Length: 174
Image (cartoon, rainbow, N blue to C red; front, side, top):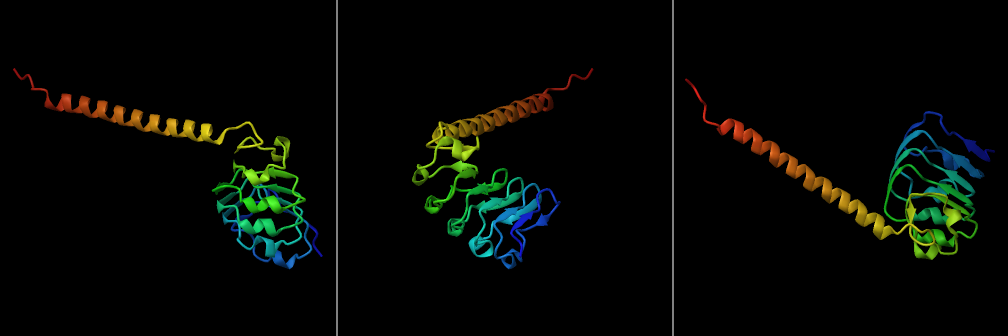
């Protein structure tokens, strides 16, 4: 019977490991600091139903955080930081009464307001109860993107103008 599975920094590659559902009594799963990629399985609650501590940090998981994570009713700690996850944190996680700490990125759903800022333990989150304003972060990123695009276009136009000026100069032959 496997209760704790520590495979952090093991050099694992590929997608979320198949076969973990065979460890049906597992309470801790640490797959951090590997080269795992692809989506976090939509059926994660079936694969690790009794997990209390889930650490998938420092990998390259893609896509959204699966809503089914809320069906892992024993979860105390979730660490998904430093992946390539997109979307918002599923509001269904508010139903996890034992959940005490998040290490995620994204906007905190208002339904998770029962937690204090210290429960989230991650600077990449935004929204209440944290002081990070998601709209400010979003608008500043948008400003940086627009500024970079305009700057790149201006530099390209200047280079094109200089090249045209040189090419179209009448040659002074004697």
